Amino acid sequence: MMHSREILILTGMSGAGRSTVAHALEDLGWYVVDNVPPALLPDLVEHTANAKISSMAVVVDVRSGRFFDDLNSSLQKLESEKVPYRLLFLDANDQALVQRFESTRRPHPLQGSERIVDGISRERAQLEELRSRADIVIETSSLNVHQLEKRVNEVFAAGQAKGVRVNVLSFGYKYGIPVDADLLLDCRFIPNPHWIPELRPKTGLDSDVRAQVLKSAGVTEFVDDYVALVQKMAEGYLREGKKFVTLAVGCTGGKHRSVAIAEEIASRLGASTTETEIEAHALHRDLGRE
Image (cartoon, rainbow, N blue to C red):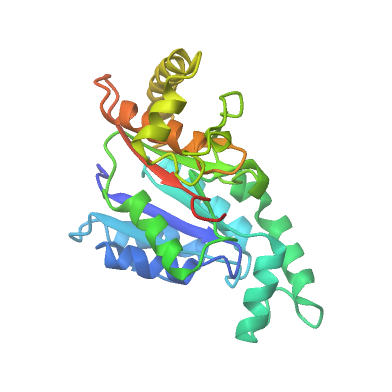
Protein backbone atom coordinates (compact mmCIF):
# COMPACT_ATOMS: atom_id res chain seq x y z
CA MET A 1 0.00 0.00 0.00
CA MET A 2 1.33 3.47 -0.88
CA HIS A 3 1.35 6.03 1.90
CA SER A 4 1.39 9.56 0.50
CA ARG A 5 0.06 11.43 3.51
CA GLU A 6 2.09 13.12 6.20
CA ILE A 7 2.04 11.37 9.57
CA LEU A 8 3.46 13.30 12.51
CA ILE A 9 4.00 11.72 15.92
CA LEU A 10 3.94 14.44 18.56
CA THR A 11 5.55 13.70 21.90
CA GLY A 12 7.97 15.19 24.43
CA MET A 13 8.21 16.37 28.00
CA SER A 14 5.02 16.89 29.96
CA GLY A 15 4.42 20.63 30.25
CA ALA A 16 6.46 21.46 27.15
CA GLY A 17 3.40 22.50 25.12
CA ARG A 18 1.86 19.46 23.44
CA SER A 19 -1.69 20.82 23.74
CA THR A 20 -0.68 24.16 22.26
CA VAL A 21 1.06 22.49 19.33
CA ALA A 22 -1.86 20.12 18.76
CA HIS A 23 -4.30 23.05 18.58
CA ALA A 24 -1.97 24.96 16.25
CA LEU A 25 -1.77 21.96 13.93
CA GLU A 26 -5.56 21.67 13.91
CA ASP A 27 -5.76 25.32 12.90
CA LEU A 28 -3.45 24.51 9.99
CA GLY A 29 -5.82 21.78 8.82
CA TRP A 30 -4.13 18.74 10.34
CA TYR A 31 -6.22 15.86 11.67
CA VAL A 32 -5.05 15.51 15.29
CA VAL A 33 -5.63 12.49 17.54
CA ASP A 34 -4.72 13.10 21.19
CA ASN A 35 -3.48 10.72 23.91
CA VAL A 36 -3.26 7.61 21.78
CA PRO A 37 -1.82 4.54 23.57
CA PRO A 38 1.42 3.90 21.65
CA ALA A 39 0.55 0.23 21.14
CA LEU A 40 -2.48 1.29 19.08
CA LEU A 41 -0.55 3.58 16.73
CA PRO A 42 -0.18 1.08 13.83
CA ASP A 43 -3.89 0.20 14.04
CA LEU A 44 -4.83 3.88 13.95
CA VAL A 45 -2.67 4.47 10.88
CA GLU A 46 -4.16 1.42 9.14
CA HIS A 47 -7.78 2.27 9.97
CA THR A 48 -7.43 5.83 8.67
CA ALA A 49 -5.49 4.87 5.54
CA ASN A 50 -8.52 5.20 3.24
CA ALA A 51 -9.84 8.40 4.81
CA LYS A 52 -9.29 11.67 2.99
CA ILE A 53 -6.69 12.87 5.50
CA SER A 54 -3.57 14.38 3.96
CA SER A 55 -1.89 15.28 7.25
CA MET A 56 -2.41 13.47 10.55
CA ALA A 57 -0.74 14.20 13.90
CA VAL A 58 -0.87 11.65 16.71
CA VAL A 59 -0.14 12.81 20.26
CA VAL A 60 1.48 10.23 22.55
CA ASP A 61 2.90 10.77 26.04
CA VAL A 62 3.93 9.10 29.29
CA ARG A 63 0.34 8.89 30.52
CA SER A 64 0.13 5.76 28.38
CA GLY A 65 1.37 2.86 30.55
CA ARG A 66 4.36 1.01 29.05
CA PHE A 67 5.17 4.11 27.04
CA PHE A 68 8.59 3.55 25.57
CA ASP A 69 8.43 -0.21 24.91
CA ASP A 70 5.05 0.13 23.20
CA LEU A 71 6.05 3.17 21.18
CA ASN A 72 9.34 1.64 20.08
CA SER A 73 7.53 -1.50 18.89
CA SER A 74 4.91 0.57 17.07
CA LEU A 75 7.52 2.70 15.30
CA GLN A 76 9.37 -0.44 14.22
CA LYS A 77 6.13 -1.84 12.80
CA LEU A 78 5.46 1.37 10.85
CA GLU A 79 8.99 1.23 9.45
CA SER A 80 8.66 -2.45 8.49
CA GLU A 81 5.45 -1.60 6.63
CA LYS A 82 7.20 1.37 4.99
CA VAL A 83 4.80 3.90 6.48
CA PRO A 84 6.56 7.30 6.40
CA TYR A 85 6.31 9.36 9.57
CA ARG A 86 8.00 12.26 11.32
CA LEU A 87 8.72 12.47 15.03
CA LEU A 88 8.28 15.88 16.70
CA PHE A 89 9.69 16.19 20.22
CA LEU A 90 8.86 19.14 22.49
CA ASP A 91 11.38 19.95 25.20
CA ALA A 92 11.93 22.58 27.89
CA ASN A 93 14.38 23.02 30.73
CA ASP A 94 13.54 21.86 34.25
CA GLN A 95 13.00 25.38 35.61
CA ALA A 96 10.42 26.21 32.93
CA LEU A 97 8.61 22.91 33.46
CA VAL A 98 8.46 23.35 37.24
CA GLN A 99 7.08 26.87 36.85
CA ARG A 100 4.38 25.65 34.46
CA PHE A 101 3.24 22.81 36.72
CA GLU A 102 3.22 25.11 39.74
CA SER A 103 1.23 27.78 37.90
CA THR A 104 -1.46 25.25 36.92
CA ARG A 105 -1.30 23.51 40.32
CA ARG A 106 -1.24 20.15 38.62
CA PRO A 107 1.10 17.27 39.52
CA HIS A 108 3.60 15.85 37.07
CA PRO A 109 2.27 12.49 35.79
CA LEU A 110 5.38 10.66 37.05
CA GLN A 111 6.02 12.40 40.38
CA GLY A 112 3.81 10.16 42.53
CA SER A 113 4.14 11.22 46.16
CA GLU A 114 7.44 13.03 45.49
CA ARG A 115 8.36 16.43 44.07
CA ILE A 116 7.68 17.79 40.60
CA VAL A 117 11.42 17.74 39.83
CA ASP A 118 11.51 14.01 40.59
CA GLY A 119 8.79 13.35 38.04
CA ILE A 120 10.57 15.52 35.47
CA SER A 121 13.83 13.66 36.07
CA ARG A 122 12.18 10.27 35.56
CA GLU A 123 10.46 11.41 32.39
CA ARG A 124 13.61 12.98 30.93
CA ALA A 125 15.56 9.75 31.47
CA GLN A 126 12.74 7.72 29.94
CA LEU A 127 12.54 9.94 26.84
CA GLU A 128 16.26 10.49 26.26
CA GLU A 129 16.59 7.92 23.48
CA LEU A 130 13.34 9.03 21.85
CA ARG A 131 14.53 12.64 21.76
CA SER A 132 17.72 11.59 19.98
CA ARG A 133 15.61 9.96 17.25
CA ALA A 134 13.37 12.97 16.66
CA ASP A 135 13.20 14.55 13.22
CA ILE A 136 12.21 17.89 14.75
CA VAL A 137 12.92 19.20 18.25
CA ILE A 138 11.27 22.41 19.45
CA GLU A 139 12.65 23.88 22.65
CA THR A 140 9.87 25.83 24.35
CA SER A 141 11.51 27.15 27.55
CA SER A 142 11.55 30.77 26.38
CA LEU A 143 8.36 30.64 24.29
CA ASN A 144 4.93 31.75 25.42
CA VAL A 145 1.78 30.21 23.94
CA HIS A 146 1.58 32.67 21.04
CA GLN A 147 5.27 32.34 20.20
CA LEU A 148 4.99 28.55 20.18
CA GLU A 149 1.97 28.73 17.87
CA LYS A 150 3.97 30.98 15.56
CA ARG A 151 6.86 28.53 15.58
CA VAL A 152 4.52 25.68 14.62
CA ASN A 153 3.15 27.79 11.79
CA GLU A 154 6.66 28.51 10.56
CA VAL A 155 7.58 24.82 10.53
CA PHE A 156 4.34 23.23 9.29
CA ALA A 157 2.35 25.83 7.37
CA ALA A 158 3.58 24.45 4.07
CA GLY A 159 1.89 21.11 4.80
CA GLN A 160 3.60 18.05 3.42
CA ALA A 161 7.14 19.03 2.51
CA LYS A 162 8.36 17.77 -0.87
CA GLY A 163 11.96 18.75 -0.22
CA VAL A 164 13.91 19.94 2.80
CA ARG A 165 12.70 22.80 4.97
CA VAL A 166 15.51 24.79 6.57
CA ASN A 167 14.75 27.15 9.45
CA VAL A 168 17.69 29.53 9.75
CA LEU A 169 17.54 30.70 13.37
CA SER A 170 19.59 33.67 14.56
CA PHE A 171 20.48 33.81 18.27
CA GLY A 172 22.73 35.50 20.80
CA TYR A 173 25.39 33.42 22.56
CA LYS A 174 24.85 35.37 25.75
CA TYR A 175 21.33 33.92 25.90
CA GLY A 176 22.49 30.37 25.30
CA ILE A 177 22.82 28.07 22.30
CA PRO A 178 19.47 26.78 20.91
CA VAL A 179 19.13 23.17 22.03
CA ASP A 180 17.03 22.27 18.98
CA ALA A 181 19.72 23.23 16.45
CA ASP A 182 20.87 20.62 13.94
CA LEU A 183 23.72 22.81 12.68
CA LEU A 184 25.55 25.66 14.41
CA LEU A 185 27.23 28.63 12.74
CA ASP A 186 29.33 31.18 14.66
CA CYS A 187 29.39 34.75 13.28
CA ARG A 188 31.49 36.32 16.00
CA PHE A 189 34.52 36.54 13.67
CA ILE A 190 32.72 39.36 11.80
CA PRO A 191 33.32 42.96 13.01
CA ASN A 192 30.41 43.97 15.24
CA PRO A 193 28.17 46.85 14.02
CA HIS A 194 27.40 47.45 17.70
CA TRP A 195 30.60 49.53 17.83
CA ILE A 196 29.45 51.83 15.00
CA PRO A 197 27.34 54.53 16.74
CA GLU A 198 24.87 55.09 13.90
CA LEU A 199 24.27 51.33 13.52
CA ARG A 200 24.12 50.37 17.19
CA PRO A 201 20.35 50.98 17.69
CA LYS A 202 19.50 49.20 14.44
CA THR A 203 19.31 45.46 13.71
CA GLY A 204 20.41 43.02 11.04
CA LEU A 205 17.03 43.52 9.36
CA ASP A 206 18.04 47.10 8.44
CA SER A 207 19.64 47.39 5.02
CA ASP A 208 22.62 49.47 6.14
CA VAL A 209 23.48 47.02 8.93
CA ARG A 210 23.13 44.07 6.57
CA ALA A 211 25.35 45.80 4.00
CA GLN A 212 27.98 46.53 6.65
CA VAL A 213 28.02 42.88 7.78
CA LEU A 214 28.11 41.40 4.29
CA LYS A 215 30.94 43.65 3.05
CA SER A 216 33.27 42.65 5.87
CA ALA A 217 36.39 40.77 4.83
CA GLY A 218 35.80 37.11 4.06
CA VAL A 219 32.03 37.17 4.65
CA THR A 220 30.99 36.75 1.00
CA GLU A 221 33.17 33.67 0.64
CA PHE A 222 31.99 32.39 4.02
CA VAL A 223 28.32 32.62 3.02
CA ASP A 224 29.00 31.15 -0.43
CA ASP A 225 30.79 28.15 1.04
CA TYR A 226 28.18 27.54 3.73
CA VAL A 227 25.22 27.78 1.37
CA ALA A 228 26.93 25.29 -0.94
CA LEU A 229 27.57 22.99 2.02
CA VAL A 230 23.94 23.05 3.17
CA GLN A 231 22.76 22.44 -0.39
CA LYS A 232 24.96 19.35 -0.54
CA MET A 233 23.81 18.16 2.89
CA ALA A 234 20.16 18.63 1.87
CA GLU A 235 20.55 15.86 -0.70
CA GLY A 236 21.67 13.45 2.02
CA TYR A 237 19.03 14.65 4.49
CA LEU A 238 16.28 13.95 1.98
CA ARG A 239 17.67 10.48 1.19
CA GLU A 240 17.61 9.71 4.91
CA GLY A 241 14.04 11.01 5.29
CA LYS A 242 14.94 14.13 7.30
CA LYS A 243 12.83 16.97 5.92
CA PHE A 244 13.20 19.60 8.64
CA VAL A 245 16.54 21.18 9.56
CA THR A 246 17.32 23.98 12.00
CA LEU A 247 20.46 25.96 11.26
CA ALA A 248 21.37 28.18 14.22
CA VAL A 249 23.43 31.28 13.42
CA GLY A 250 24.91 33.02 16.44
CA CYS A 251 26.63 36.25 17.38
CA THR A 252 27.10 37.85 20.79
CA GLY A 253 23.65 39.40 21.27
CA GLY A 254 21.59 38.07 18.36
CA LYS A 255 20.88 41.57 17.07
CA HIS A 256 23.19 42.50 14.20
CA ARG A 257 25.56 39.95 12.65
CA SER A 258 23.60 36.73 13.17
CA VAL A 259 20.37 38.35 11.98
CA ALA A 260 21.97 39.68 8.79
CA ILE A 261 23.73 36.40 8.03
CA ALA A 262 20.60 34.34 8.76
CA GLU A 263 18.57 36.50 6.39
CA GLU A 264 21.22 36.20 3.67
CA ILE A 265 21.59 32.41 4.01
CA ALA A 266 17.82 31.87 4.04
CA SER A 267 17.42 34.07 0.98
CA ARG A 268 20.18 32.26 -0.90
CA LEU A 269 18.95 28.79 0.03
CA GLY A 270 15.37 29.66 -0.90
CA ALA A 271 16.46 30.91 -4.30
CA SER A 272 18.74 27.96 -5.05
CA THR A 273 18.00 25.81 -8.09
CA THR A 274 19.56 22.58 -6.91
CA GLU A 275 18.02 19.19 -7.69
CA THR A 276 16.86 18.94 -4.07
CA GLU A 277 14.09 21.43 -3.32
CA ILE A 278 14.95 23.64 -0.34
CA GLU A 279 12.43 25.86 1.44
CA ALA A 280 14.22 28.24 3.78
CA HIS A 281 12.98 30.76 6.34
CA ALA A 282 14.85 33.11 8.66
CA LEU A 283 13.75 33.25 12.31
CA HIS A 284 15.21 35.48 15.01
CA ARG A 285 15.07 34.11 18.53
CA ASP A 286 16.65 36.96 20.47
CA LEU A 287 15.85 40.01 18.38
CA GLY A 288 14.38 42.68 20.67
CA ARG A 289 15.59 41.14 23.94
CA GLU A 290 17.97 43.99 24.70
